Length: 325
Image (tube, rainbow, N blue to C red; front, side, top):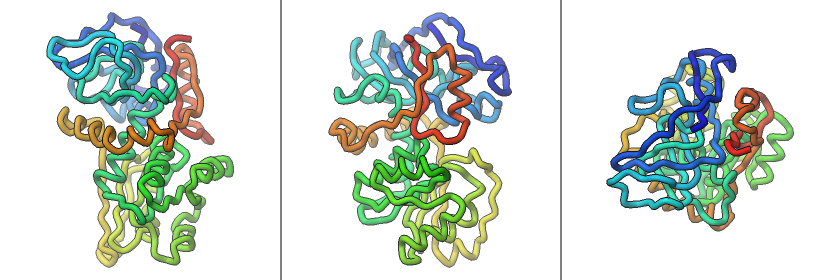
């Protein structure tokens, strides 16, 4: 198989595309034949040596998601057969043209999605849905504030929030990002003064749920932007992880601040995330009410350029690798 590997910790100098023996599925695992694979900020963190793969996952092959065709199955698999179109989540090893994954961590790809669109779904939509619906319990009629609304998880959260009947406010920096987020039907505030922007839009009430995808730079302003009895859920800390939180403000507003990560969960916990995604997100993906957002597709041999795009400014949606071209 072709696989992206990290030869050590660092920048793009440690990234290589190599040939490896095809993985062999056993037990409840299936092997997925991949055309497109999605990059995520977590892959860049792993490359830098800050986010190692969990036990049981390839230590040097990044990638947290998989999409493609089942081409082999372990002897205990009951849910899938060769030829099924699937997508799902893995602990590592997703940036390869053949990926082994537990059968319960996969869902069926709707016929309405192309192969590239399907590759832009698993990690971001499952992460977004689990964070804002399963954990923060966003309800119809509430206000959701999404930081990094032009990114992969952010754009997924914006769409899911709107689909469940919430009022969605996206935080963006550039004018192009603002326009893209508005095109979904969301309202937009600028990153530099988001708390004041949210206050203006909500008559001073604030957001019921804040999805934090950047990290420390948005604290303590998040406590000003959140409503009384609101929920702040932290999914990303690419902008920094050390933040000061005024506890009195937390107490006065009765705010819940929660962190979450998907990669390190148990097999059962990940399966629950996938089933929640199947129940609520898959139908709106199939109907076209929600559409995956692709920023740019790179041939796998240009993986270094793909990482540059992932980490650079101005992207909207997912960066993908093409393992066929």
